Amino acid sequence: MPETNWQLKIDAVIDGKTADIERIDNTIFMEMAGVSMALDQLRKSLDKLKMHLNEREFEKASQLGYQDVAQEFVFVQRTLAGLQTAVHQKEAFISTIAQEINGSYEDAAPYVESRMTSAVKKSAVLSIENDKT
Image (tube, rainbow, N blue to C red; front, side, top):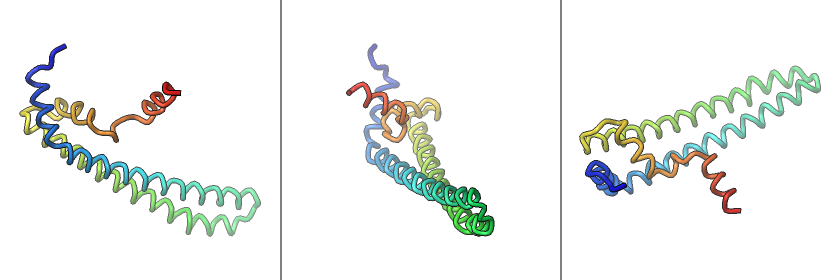
């Protein structure tokens, strides 16, 4: 199917914003890494808490809960805030593209996201990797 003028216009605008797309992608990936690290730390603290409870070490469990678990939970919240900020940057960028093409957010979003590595679902990546083997 031949590309329409609309598609060509969107592609031209997006082609000129490749560096911005890469910057947003990198920001999202960095924030995702932070969230993953924070979740790992929280899991470790929860595993320690579970161990203390299983050993009936209630004082140690409660102390751990008020210190390490609470600290790691706050760390998760902070990293999620960073990820949320990155998503807001992406949405603002899509809105800017929509304005430039005189279209709506919904018109621009699929075209922008098709150029973003961070928009590819992990299940799709795993499926492609499995097909290669």
